[in-house]
Length: 67
Image (cartoon, rainbow, N blue to C red; front, side):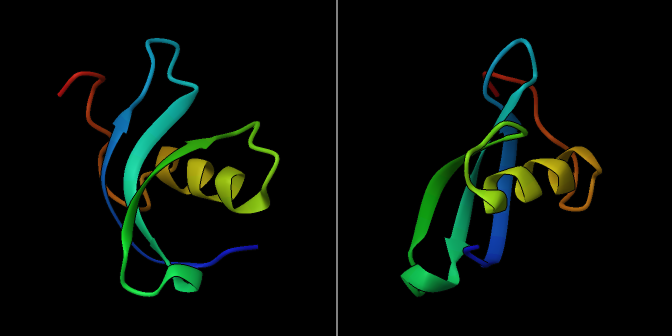
């Protein structure tokens, strides 16, 4: 599982609220921020973990789609 070192700007990626897009820094990529889409059905564990943490409010509020 990839570990992330920072996460910011989460917002819903779709109207169904099944995907969240955010800027993430993963330890395997150094300091590079990448856009990441987290879902609860991601085939990778880190995507599912990030999605649940975001929904649980662990990283602040999730902005509405389009903001």
